[in-house]
Amino acid sequence: MFYEMRTYTLHIGKMKQYLEHFEKEGLPVISRYAKLVGWWYTEIGELNQVVHIWAYESLDDRIERRAALYRDADWLERFIPVAFPMLVRMESKLLMPAAFSPIQ
Image (cartoon, rainbow, N blue to C red):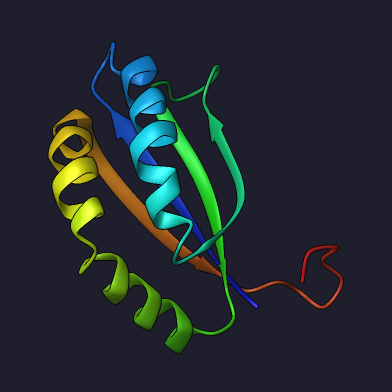
C-alpha cells in the first residue's frame, strides 16, 4: 500500500469556506478515485493548513486514479474553480510504511 500526504496552505480567513466546499463538492468526487485515510487542519504551528492522507494500492494505481480524477467533469467544473483560488501552496509526499508501522 502507498500513501500520499497532501498539505495545502490556505489564504488567511479561508479555512471554514475551504472545509465546507471540500466536504460538499470535493470529497464525493475524489472518493470515487482514492481512499481517504485521514483529514486534519492545523491549530498550532504553521496555521491555515489542511493535511490529508490518501491510500493507493501502488504507484501505478495512484497515477491511473489521479488521471481519472482530472478527467472528471465534477472535479474540474464544480470543485477546482472554487477551491484553487483559496490555496497559497500545495505539497504532496508519497509515503511508504515501515515494516513495523501499524498502518500498512
